[in-house]
Amino acid sequence: MISRCAFLSIGLMAVCLMVASVFAAEAEDGAGGAAKNEARLLVGKHIQNKYLVEGMDLVVKYTLFNIGDVAAVDVSLTEPGFGKEDFSIVGGQPAIKIDRLAGGANTTHALVLRPLKFGYFNFTSAEVKYRISEEEGSEVRFGYSSEPGQGLIIAAKDYDRQFSAHTLDWVAFAVMTLPSLGIPFLLWWSSKVKYENIAKAPKKGD
Image 1: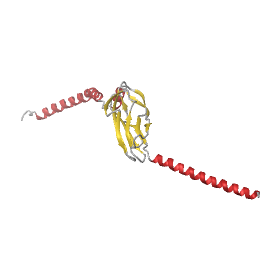
Image 2: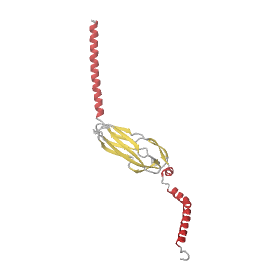
Image 3: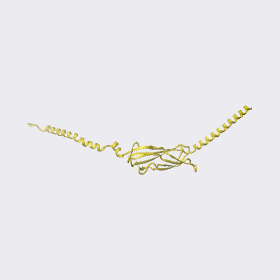
Image 4: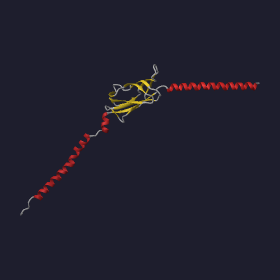
C-alpha cells in the first residue's frame, strides 16, 4: 500500500513538472515573439579625422542600424555634446529626424565642425529617440550612441609648425646660401669671359 501511494505521488509530480515546463515554454515563445516584433536601433558615433586641429574642419559620422524586424518610426538623433563656445558648425545639423527606418536597414549622417579651442576634449554620446513599431501608441524608446571618448585638439600654430610647407624657411635658406653659391659663380664667369676675349683678340703681326 505504501509503495502504491509513493508511485502515485511520483507520477503526479511528473505530470505537474511537464505542465509547468509547457507553460514556461509558451511564456518564453510569447516574449520572444514580442521582442521580434519591435525595432531596435544601434547608433555609432565616430570621429573621421586623423588629426584634430584648432580652426580646421572636424567631421563626425553617425550611423544608425535597425537590428529589429520591423520599422522604427519618428526617429530623432540629437547631438548635445558640441557647445557654441567650443565649436562652430560648418555643415550638417546637430539634430535630425527620420520618419521611418526599416527593419535591417541603416542610414548615416555627418556633422562638420570647427574647433574654436585647443586642448583635450571629451567626445560624449549622442541621444536617440524612436517608436519601436508603426502601430499607433507604440512604445517610445530612448538610447545613446557609442562614445568616442577623449581626444586632443592640436593648436593651429603647432600643427603649422609640424605639417606646413615651410615656405618661409626655404626662402630664408635660399637667401643665406645665395652668396656662397653666387660669388664663386660670378668669379668663374668673369674669368671665363676674360679668357675668351683674350683668345679672340688679334695677335700682333697678323
